[in-house]
Image (cartoon, rainbow, N blue to C red):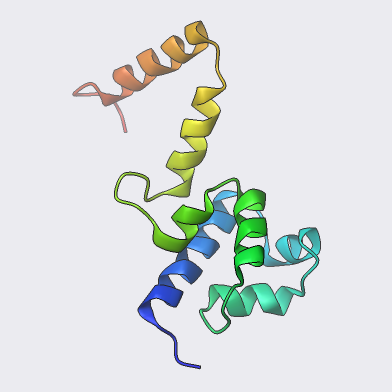
Length: 112
């Protein structure tokens, strides 16, 4: 079965999301009751991922299934998506503290 550009993009986002979640292919396979080579084949773009599998992986990686399938201009990195979700859980005063820290980091001359 030929590797299509769409399948390769989904595979790339799945691998990126797994890595951002800090999981190995073996850990993912165990958590969703699959074989590790299956995860490898999906991430290589050699195997299609079913809608059910995609939903389970999205939940495990804490990213949206839509992002895994389509990506998006404004949320192209699962780390950014994860950060946004975590920030939304903060109390207002804690969020203000984080935002002030970010502003400090973005100032000219701030160390990167």
